[in-house]
Amino acid sequence: MADGSFSITTPIFYVNDVPHIGHAYTEVAADMMARWHRQRGDDTWLLTGTDEHGQKILRTASANDVSPQEWADRLVRDAWKPLLETVDIANDDFIRTTDERHVAGVTAFLQKLYDDGYIYAGEFEGYYCVGCEEYKQPSDLVAGTGPYEGQQVCAIHSIPVEVLSERNYFFRMSDFEQRLLDLYESRPDFIQPESVRNEIVQFVKQGLRDLSISRSSFDWGIQIPWDPKHVLYVWFDALLNYITALGYGTADDEAFRRLWPSVHIVGKDIARFHAVIWPAMLMAAGIDVPERVFGHGWLLVGGEKMSKSKLTGIAPSEITDTFGSDAFRYYFLRAITFGQDGNFSWEDISARYQAELANGFGNLASRVIAMIGRYFNGVVPERVALEPADSAIDALAVSVTERADAAVRAFAPHDAIATIWELVDALNGYITDQEPWALAKQEGQRDRLATVLTTALRGLGTVNVLLSPVMPKATAKLWAAIGDGGGVHEQRIDQAPSWSGAAQVVPLDGGLFPRIEQVEAAEQQVHA
Ligand code: MSP
Image (cartoon, rainbow, N blue to C red; front, side):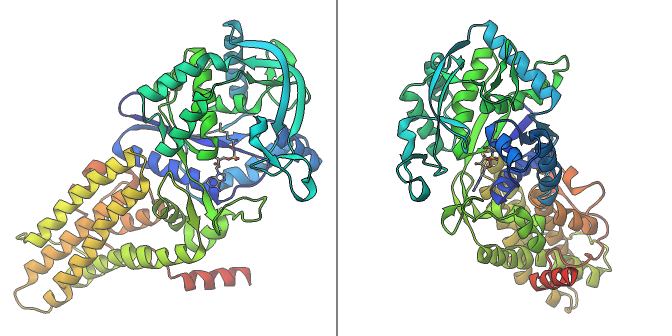
């Protein structure tokens, strides 16, 4: 990835089930960073998609009496693409592992590895968890309980593993052990955060085995080109999406040459696939390893990892129907330190919605626009003589922009938002201190009133540009009232502090963040 370009990916999601807020969280984090980089003027690319092969999907489809392709088509159409609307994702591409372009790129990649001697035929005997779609070592298993008493089960899924004994193809992953360790050492931020990096370094230091990469007991997958009785192991297939989407292995690989290597945002549970298997595959093919692998934390509900199987799964629309997509995005990006686990609760999102969005940002916007309307008929006045309090706001806008930009580039969206909130809070404090409503009543204070309101408006404009990647809808609405043309998402981050406002502001059509009681009442009416 060249300087000035920013290519970022989410994992591709299994289509065996519908999305929950854990999946939406990954999407939102990657999308916020992509939007921010677009506003920095970087050549930006956000890729997401779906992982459709493998035994897990095959079994779900069979249980529902449809073919796996029909099942995948249905879930992509009815659940996974709509998720992008629900949480407002501006992705540049959506790859499905059943896309022809993907199959073509995977086939070319496999043939190359085979021709170069990195794949060989062998006998596999061992355990496999279909829930994880992963081969397991005896040390990964625990004693089952309840219906599985007396059996060995997967520690993550609590279901029995399957015993496999198959002739299949292996990837010479063990050849790459030292090169991977050298990579982690020479690029200390290749894997982030530190906790995930340490775990992976320890894992590789224990020694890598060759990886079984084909299966012959079912046929829902990409055929091994030189032996079509075998299909490719689903993770080997899935990881390749990151380059097949860019045209790798096809005649049109301009995007691959321009945008690879990408940054991968993944849940920490799958960081190992991305930071061990994936770079080894790429090294074997002579392709650059990813720019970075960031393993974010889990969303917890009631202190436990949220999961559908444990009935703690929450559909993203349950939250967006009440709070809207902006508040969803804001809440998860702000309340959870990116890289750590975070607990979701309805009380917390309601409290932050009211205090930070409605009373903090929303109220600031309404007050500034209303006062310029009331005292200056909506015509934005010139600033006259700046006092220290005004210059302090201008200076804070510059420093907040620089620090927020550094935080996003360091994959710390929570820090970026907290930094932007320094300006929101400072502007609310400034208005309280300067009392423009009192200035409006005093003789001879017209210039001062003008200076205060225009300083506040400029600060509000800075906040609005910086929050556009976080809350695209509310900031677009505010831009319609205070902006000076174009879309807020087209405004450059580095120019946010020097934004000086339109000649005129128009009243906000309703508040930016409606009171929740009203939202609930409206909801009830719709459902009545
Ligand atoms: N298909 C694989 C990824 C292949 S990428 C080449 C997969 N899919 S998944 O649908 O099961 O999960 C996708 C992502 O959602 C993972 O990164 C996972 O960590 C994330 N999340 C699933 N549950 C989550 C939470 N409870 N909290 C946060 N993220 C969660 O794995």
